[in-house]
Length: 197
Image 1 (cartoon, rainbow, N blue to C red):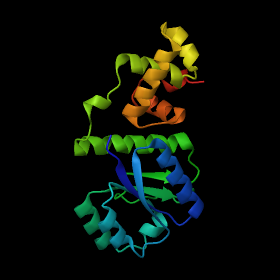
Image 2 (cartoon, rainbow, N blue to C red):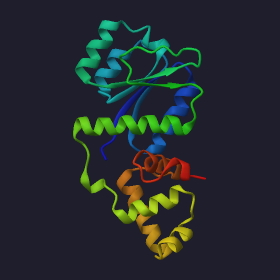
Image 3 (cartoon, rainbow, N blue to C red):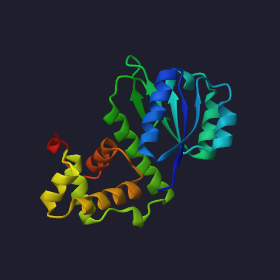
Image 4 (tube, rainbow, N blue to C red):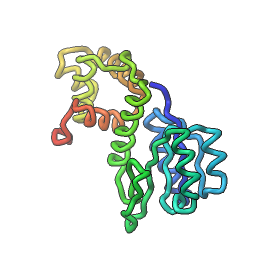
């Protein structure tokens, strides 16, 4: 899957670093820049041509609206806002927002959802990245918390076969962590959230 370039404009160093770390874990994003103010906003957008920008709403309010609309129209990036808990109002220019108090799974779900919409828009979906029925079955049991050995017993296959399929799943999806794979499984209806431990 082609990487999606993302820029993070966030005032809090800890929030920006945490978000960068979380997105890198998904292995789908190139994080081009972490910026704490809007001073070089236009230059950064022109150089990196991001697909997505994550933007603290306080920084957004400092950017001239005409400049912002011009850049958004030219580079066609999605905008995801970052809000403090008490700041729920969001401009229509944002496709979504992340609140400071949201948990890891909620944030991952939002990014995966918008990544899917970008792939559809840009026709970057590749059929060779689709999981086989066997891979979906293995992913379902892994998401439910079973070990490789337990999955092998459930499906009457060897542990080696489970390991091979698991490596193929990671390679196809570009998601390395079990939590990331679990979110993928939920979003793609491979597993029901109610079935998870």
